[in-house]
Image 1 (cartoon, rainbow, N blue to C red):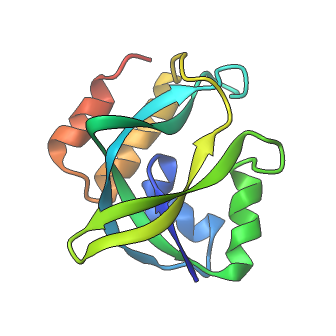
Image 2: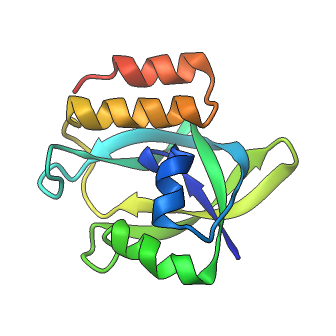
Length: 145
């Protein structure tokens, strides 16, 4: 098993059950020193896509999944790794049990552009369902789209 840190729509455990059915949710945590942003507007179907970038004094709420080997290829296909939309990157996640190494998907595109209202709403709903703090969810809901 490898540890995957989901930060956008994949925060929704029901969605992840369909995308990676053999990969249980382990818990939640924070990517400290990173911020959620959007980019690659030309790559998305309805506007910019979620990604993360390094940013001191910022943090991103994540859900941690133990990804089974049989689900890794499926996740890569879903995230467009073979199409050069996203790539995997190693990060350290702060949890209640300490720091955990994990991987995330990072956009292969420039930062900039706005997400669609529907996409941003899905991300906020996913964060809320994963147990993100109220102020984090509200900040997502207030973002421009």
